[in-house]
Length: 309
Ligand SMILES: CC(=O)N[C@H](C=O)[C@@H](O)[C@H](O)[C@H](O)CO
Ligand SMILES: CC(=O)C(=O)O
Image (tube, rainbow, N blue to C red; front, side, top):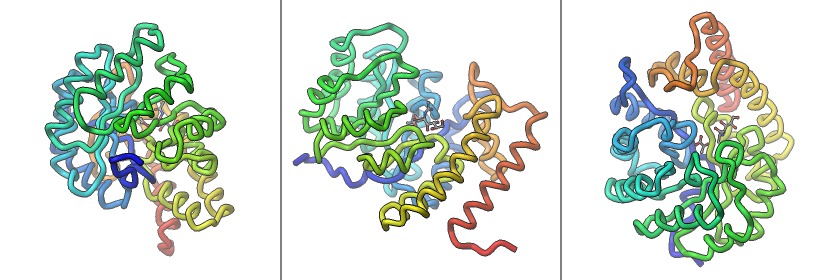
């Protein structure tokens, strides 16, 4: 048995987008407003500074500012996971200590980025982060961007420590997800990465998920989750299919994060544009974004049982 409470990490956790002002600097007020919007949606937690959060495009100082804003706003109500992955172990350790100091509930990290690293190197990187605080640690496995293939043996070695409570898997193989679940055991969390496969991941062993597109439709992922938990498989599948149609459209825009941010802006949550090299949505695509937003909102009403006029 682990000494950490795993329940608070199960279910739906939004990989939150970062908020910038017109100059492109971190906007803490906007971040707080967005975090408040998410708290009202009923999700379990927020994952700050990950892929969707553009942590890798920010300075250490900016990453701290984003986390501080989110924890200050909703840290008492939601589970806050701070992504501290960076190219340099020193930066990750500094961010982990900061996460602890401000009251985040867990830290998480990708393998160190840019260099092609041996498993020993990645293990050392993660271990330094784990050892730097008493917060629980969630491995972030995303081989398509980091190039690092996490082996079952390294996973098991890490998971033997009380503090290493789980792994977020963004790899597309649900078989790998299941194998990691089996290897990690009952008290080890496996969190689904690809939003398109939430139900598949959940069905094959995931305890919940952390995803970027949850941020524009948390209610739909909560719907899939509640149908799944109640054994309504056909209904869960119906909603996953709807979500996937919406994700295909989001992915057809110049950048996924730009599209999600543009949608949030239409709803009154202006988080600025994504940082380059991630592309903004040009004015010529705004009509498509508006239509997509309307479709998403109407599905959200349906999912919540609100009768449409
Ligand atoms: C690479 C990436 O950002 N993956 C996210 C997290 O795993 C997902 O939430 C995707 O954004 C989502 O599945 C859309 O493809
Ligand atoms: C965790 C995740 O989905 C993200 O960082 O975008």
